[in-house]
Image (tube, rainbow, N blue to C red):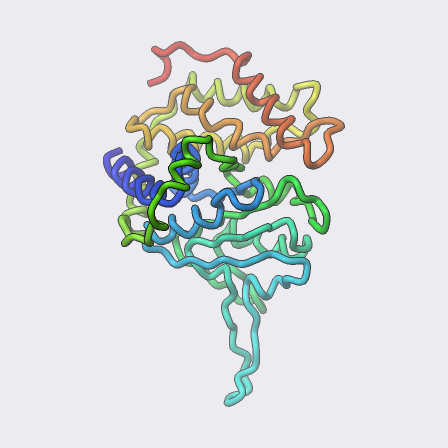
Length: 314
């Protein structure tokens, strides 16, 4: 796990220069990046979402595009469009914003469902199909999408099928008083530093995740947790099978970041609510209340589902 430990430490330190006091959130974003997932930042404006994405791309020496989602945004603005060449008359494909390594989809819920769905193939298959031709996306391809959970006017809530494509749903939240005082006291805005990790190093580190073991007892614990969401009286839509597999993969990344080659129940507990809640639906909850309700229920289940003995972890 040496490669993973090294690059996550370097990336965390580089991003923390621009995002104060949010090392836990940064680690979770890095865990998603390691296992090839995508992140939804469900947060109010002005908490550093764009800064987080931009500083991560800069530290990773990766290409970066930011696109503002609006109701008039078209799918072709994202994936690209074929236009005639004035010299030859033949149609030439002009690539859209998704042809990058780190994509910031800002206020994704402001675009229409048709435009939102244009991201599905990109996020799942890492490719774009246009006019019958398939174009692979560059690796790594990492989407950080944002949405404002407070302002609902003029938005199109993400459907469950698209929410399920996001590995984690996170929130930066407000910094505490000491962190804001430190922010006000700094003499100058930190300059963008040089890249500390290459994309080739990241791709090599991803291969180490295959070495992280998950014992039969821990696997059974994870299955019991998933089934508990499906039988809970307040839950209408429990965790999907894809969601359970995603939780397994991101738990392996958490274990590797912590320097271990095996997953413990504590690794699962650390990331479970961030991986599960946005994939679930609570009975009778309004859209803006659903995520917090499901998150609360997941945290309650983590206290009630029996945990295997420590001797069974490795």
